[in-house]
Image (cartoon, rainbow over the protein chains, first blue to last red):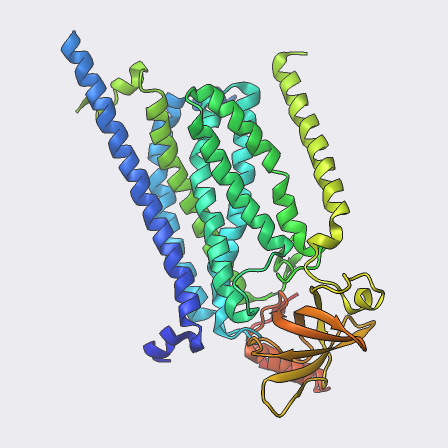
Length: 56
Length: 245
Length: 158
């Protein structure tokens, strides 16, 4: 079996790679969004803490 | 020896525990994805009826089953939060919802791409497809309802009710192919065994486990964010190393 | 009863009530939720008259006949009890085969002929490797079970 034959998937390439491509895209987007959310939250908390430190 | 479970149900303890667990789940998920894809594309043979197109199954079935399972777990956590007033269970429910919604969407997407070449239609309003679409809207409704109420405790209670009511839909999805005439085929994964070649089964179960572990890892990451956001005034949060920088 | 227990009872009660309600609604809507009617139902006039509906079943073996225009196809659909002739003009899905499941949309015409405007193939939940299918065919032809078993690389769990 050669690679171009493998990627052609007997004519079902668009459907199969479309499915797995979307799966990959979803997983990547989800991970990026969660990491981004963590970064924002920590920034917010650091700001809050610094503001508190300034007051005392 | 009695383990003090309530110790683990306090957000401050769980924040640390979850942080330690994430890499384990994430790495085992990654390894299983590689193994699962290898079995799915290089070991599993071509199907007699559907040729190569059936290989969409290896992502479609895990996404569909987990979208239903995560909904039940989410509703369970939401119910616990409602009954015992535990903050952490409600946070877990909120952390699971986006992952469940994405998997429900993935299930519909891969289903459409599978349906077009095999059935001849991207979409039909049959009971299985429609009830899975309702599941996606239940997830979105849960997220939207929670976001629309400012007071987090009230948001928890309102969305918990929606989650619990919506859980009726899960058995409907599962049994729809038995109860009504549908275009969607019957269940390949049954309580009594499967109607599938062994290598195909191995591929599917490996992929399912991989998606499962991925879902746990990403929900734990998300619940850590939610804990920090909602406990931002607590002493222990301001003492965290990552906050003190 | 403690408030916590009362809440628990309420939730259980609400779920049971809701489940019953949904069950009754689904039961009442049974025919509308089903995607298609079987030929038996159609012949019993249970299908809607004068408007389009879906009919499903298996394509009768040796019933598929193509007209000379290359597009119009005649075949029969059976639910193993009754069968119904269908006329369809258009492209058929990859999985359309004699003896396999199919769901058609269209109208009933005079003389109990179903004129379809859409044909969808319905596949089953069995996934079989070609060599296993070949072995099963050979076994069915009456070859010795030993031969068939040795040509199956991996057993099929059923």
